[in-house]
Structures are given as C-alpha cells and as structure tokens.
Amino acid sequence: MADNEEWIDAHSASEILKVSARQVYNYGIADPPRVRTKKVGWRVLYLKSDAERLAKENSVNERPRTRTTPKTDLMPASEALNYIREIQNQLNSALIEIGRLQARAEMQQMLTQDNENLRHRLAESEAKATELQLLLNIERQRNGNM
Image (cartoon, rainbow, N blue to C red; front, side, top):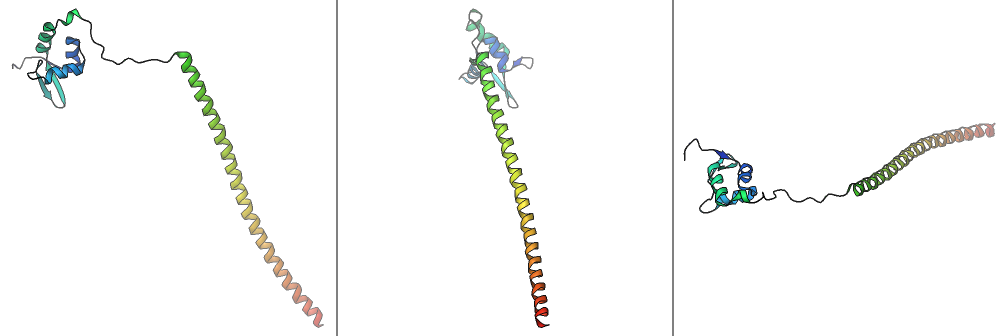
C-alpha cells in the first residue's frame, strides 16, 4: 500500500457507502475484506478508495441512505406538561411532609431537653427537701431534749 492513500473513519465510510457504521465494520472483517482496514491505536480506519469502489459496485447513488439513528417516539407536549405538573405536585407534597416531620423532630428534641431540665430540677428539689427534712429532725430533737 502506498503511504499517500487516504484512510477514513467508520462514519465517513458509512456516508460514502450509505450504510451504517456497523455494516462498514462488517465489510472490514469479511474474508476477504471488502474494505481494507488498519488500526491506529484503538481506532479502525478504512481505505477511502476501497469504500468508493464498493459504493460504485453496490450502486449506492441509486438508493437512499439507511437510517443510522433509532426511531424515538416523542411524548406530546401536553402530556409532558401534565406529567411535569404531576411530578411537581408530588414533590411539593413531599417537601411539605419533610417540613412537618422536621418541625416534629425539633419539638421532640426541645421536649427531651425540657424533660432533662425538669428531672435535674426535681433531683435538686428532692435533695433540698431531704436536707431540710434532716435539719427539721435535728431541730425537733434539740427542741425535744430541752
């Protein structure tokens, strides 16, 4: 092969041959190859003159280009908007529920802290009551001994 031969990628070869890139690949791996290939790193390149020769043999100018992209069914705009509204409503409901639950959690945390404070104050009051009861008993004993 001469160094001045032009090598092209699968997409360019598929445009010349009016077939998919996959079919170009199949032409390259046929035995014998219908389009000569060479690897450059990870890429496979195809000899442009072979692609042009095969295009003439297959009379590709007489047929339309094959579809290379799959059909995509689009949702009508009104349905898409209704779906978006439905999802937005669900999101709003979820956000309201999150807010309600956060408020409830904060309230429970405050109640827990209040409960701890009350228990501490109760323990202090009980200790003070016990101390005062002891002092009262001591005072009664003194007054009773007199």
